[in-house]
Length: 247
Image (cartoon, rainbow, N blue to C red; front, side, top):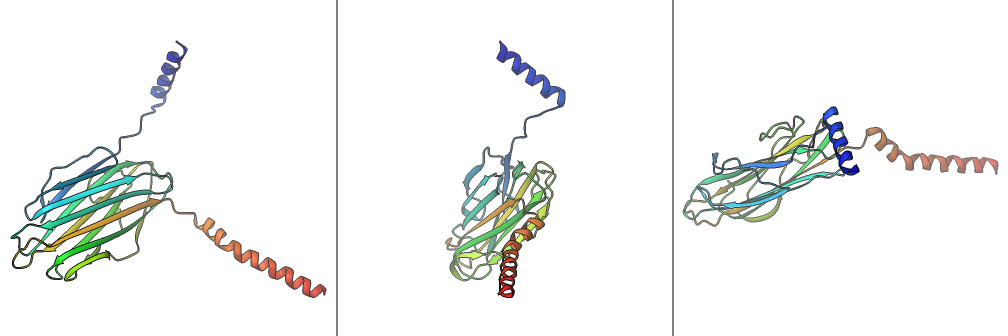
């Protein structure tokens, strides 16, 4: 009976002061082939997803993402893979636009978003291929794609043949944005592949992008920490000179 009264009292306080449960965080994404949507707006539940599908020009497309909200640093990592279909010639682009909203970690403002991306190309018949990555941070916690503050697009071209671990640039790629309590991150990744003139269906690629959000250390604290060894050195030098004069 006492426990029941305690619950009622807590509910009364919540109603009186307008306390509400935190909003549910969630993914949303759409996949495009040459600018034409191949999926509706997909809203998977949880902090990760994997999906695979065939599109107009790509025999296989695999998209996956995971996020790890944390006070020390929130990470959003997304991967896009694609292989052109047999008989497809010329260049074609597979793209994913993605959003994750209602982040509440890390706590603090402003927030610093650091971005990094890499790509792999397989059996490229030319240098016409390209991988791109771009990230946005929304102070308004928008669930729309490509909304908020951004540092611009990162990209890398494909060499002829096969290449792995290509770093997208320019680097570093980072931006600051205000945190008012909750925010969202958006990412767009794309792969442009060349099927050549015969369309053997072997041209493939992969692009992976990561956004890491942290609370930057105060400039004064950084200066103080970096100055500690110098101050210690001057103290040692002062004591040494005093000892020399006394002798």
